[in-house]
Amino acid sequence: MRDCGECNVCCTILEVKELGKKFNQRCPHLCERGCGIYETRPAPCREWFCVWVASDAPDAERPDRSGVVVEQAHARASQGRAGVMPVVAYEIRPGAFASYWGDKLLKRLARKMLVALVPHGAEQPSRFMGPPDQLRADVEWVRAPTRE
Image 1 (cartoon, helix red, strand yellow):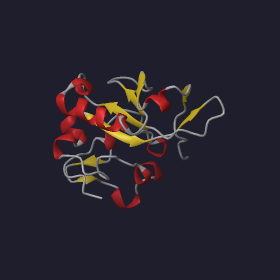
Image 2: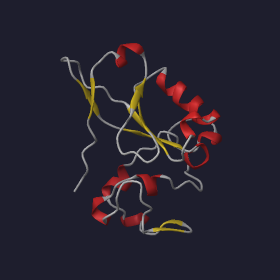
Image 3: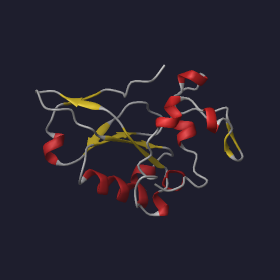
């Protein structure tokens, strides 16, 4: 895993009930040097899984640069299929999904897995991309449970 560098997009996108922080709202503990409560941060912050940090994607795809942050999430498929584990892509800036790096990132991920797209300003996915066999499943969006 690599370092986040100056990126702190997760500190805005993530809902953290323990801190009274809403989805897509800047964390009050975010300061010049990063997280002001890093050592004692709540579980949702500790457990956040940024796909860029765990990948070998180019620096241009870092969330603060590309305008797209991707995380692991949970969804379930109906029709008796086993659960489908997609990634969720959040558009941080309007138009980021259609930008060169955003489009490249989404198409690369969609070749291998289900990608739920959450457009800028929304809280739920508006559409899915992915391999045809996964898209044929009647996917019902279910947010990952928030730890209380």
